[in-house]
Image 1 (cartoon, rainbow, N blue to C red):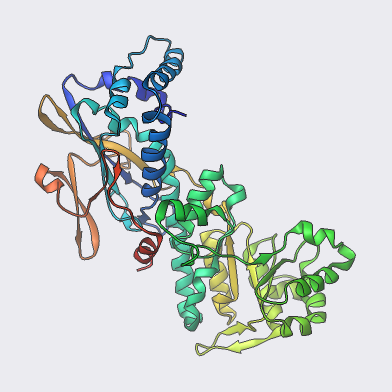
Image 2: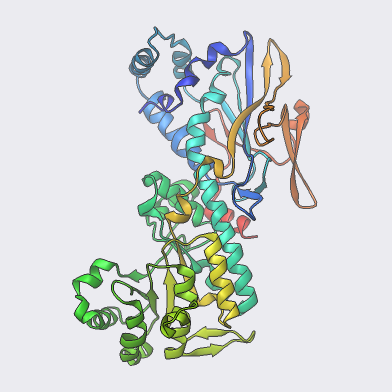
Length: 481
């Protein structure tokens, strides 16, 4: 599809709506508000994907590299019938004649944690006759960028929580954290691109992921190499169809067959197809010898119920249910008491829970395990679409707004500040500069033209070309610093 069709319909008339003599529109992308308690900084991520996939690849393949008459007539057909007018496409023809997008994007480095109300990047047209293009790109840009930023931010929050409790209960095992948050979200996302972008955001903080296309995407857009570095990884794992196919009457036989099929490495087995508690107290004790002699770890995966209560136990009349998965595994397989005094399961056995995990539930699981004397690292959390799809652009109030224009050679600082709003939608004003003060990123708006060229923003894209091309490893080091 012609990427100029990837826009909100109201953008089509804005070229004529700007004041006569407009030659420049300067805009920014900013998270304006956090709707997740405890998060006041948002991870910037996804711009390089957007630039490579859309501003370069798709604009070249589906616009600039096609015959002008073909793309302009197609554009005019849809717009004419959409608006019911004879639409003037001279500016579209002129853009095609130019042969590239006359836009400059200046941005912070990806992986940076940006304070709320501080812009992540700015856009401005580089040729006066294409002033209309800056905000024309808003819809496409917004639809792509908000989700990787949001998922990367949420993943970072999980990483902070898991790191905190690992330091408190098992600080000798901090390397495990990269595997403790595992992406289970792909099937529940709004589409494959959504799943990939969100999964890439997750993979900035964790290596564990079942969203396989993330590996390919990181090679395509962020200079990764799966043969030379760990991009994402996972383990052999069953699903309910496998367990059902083995029959309820012989579930222990299915476990035994799986242990024989995979004599080495980590094997994750979904264990609540019928009766989780029977698996834990009847089948696993009978398989104990095979499990302990196996060259690897068997991971038990509950998949329903309240995650906190299932993993940690709860006030329940059934003493088995009251203990929860981790304590029951400890009772049967034991383990060690680490230097901090917390119980760590035998390395041959473990648990993962991957249904309806949230930031709050992850915190509760870690806290309740700690209260019971268990290290938080005894469990892996499968983080799915219940975390990553229950979000919108408004989760962090993302918006792209113009703050500066030039009309007939005169610079105008512009802003919005609705009297009916609570302050969320109040924009910055004029040109922008970012700088650090005591380690924090600070916005200075209403800058001079000279000041705007200084500070933390760096040119990433200009006149159809990617200027700054970063790698996954660099971005990961930045976000985990």
